Length: 178
Length: 397
Image (cartoon, rainbow over all chains, first blue to last red; front, top):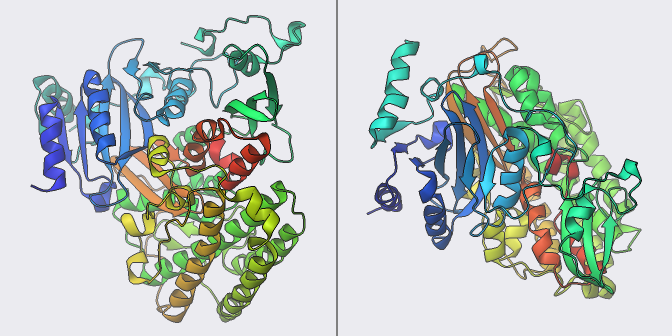
């Protein structure tokens, strides 16, 4: 079993909603998985034990909520992988990865600054890049009318959907667009 | 949802008559010991690069805790990416990191090309490699001068600037600018090189090799420098992985990792060059790694200049200002002078990108400082800070 297959199996064990195989040449990712927020810390710990490092956290605001993409890399083959978590509803909150990857503290503070996403367990969730007296909505939040649905962004490469909820998110909206 | 939601136990602000420092100082003080001193290094201090501010808690000369405070040079490049077309946004990249602008050019252009399935011509790839490596050398040279300056050696930076000027002169021929270069275009580069560029570059390589010998005799073998750096600020691979540190910091820790090799992009696979790792994970190890990287960059330039192919430098029908990206996402990572630079681009098929996320290596490298500085002498903390090679506009974006 290759390393990628092992990873995919591990993601499936953890109840991943969507597993995507990406074309590295085109997307710069090898494999990504949408998981439940409750599984994030367990999987991150697994990746840390295998020598992965958390390189980046990018937040994306879409119609469905906030999609957090955690980029991990091991500095050898198979290259970059990503874990995604969708935070739905008002008052988005995700578990902090500070206990496993201390570098996550700043990435999470940045996401808090720009999007207002909260991270439970972050020891110091104060403004990082914005001033402490910044009095406006988080600057990267979009107007409701300019929000796009996840399906329209085509983020998932060649995917395998393992949850009926995600079946609706990914498939029904595609029909709307076409 | 706004910034006032933060837990701020100290409601008095500076301008309301408090003398106890600003929000960050007071937040930092909450965990302080009673008998310690809180000191602000920066944001306007000669030994912190640019406008970095570091809060330190001191017991005598020893650092108990440290916390960098960022944002003094924050320009919200992420937002600018969403309100401009990719073509309009491209010059921003030269301004993210003014010491290695070409690598940032590359990261963004690469992300766009990946998403749009564009393959640049071979000659353009070679010119990209040559300019990027020349720029890497100039960045390392400035770091070298500034780092030794931090430690109290004033002369070396004058030597470094002499060589840096020559590189600027060379890069000016093709990029048209000396600092915030914007040389890349989607599908190639904006200008071809001429015979003068090739001659100057060819002459520069042996010249710099001679100068590197002087650097070694003057600085690297200097006993005062060695005493200031050897054994100071050790960072093992584990701490680098936990904080996402990359580049020379990670390589000095003993892991031979380089984006040019691990996730090869462009034509780097065609060139012979070593990825150094070690020999030690202290400040001196990071110092040696960077000097060695100047040599590896010279090797790459030498090979690229020798085998520079003929042909076009830009594809036909290269994307212009009104170009619309297809929907999708792409991530492009390149090896900058400070580590892995990444651009995460998401498009919904509209005029402007839906989201641009810049990953700057300095940001992650600096986040490691608080842990590395714990328990060191204040003067050693400054050495550690310098050994991370920080460029604040890149950290703040």
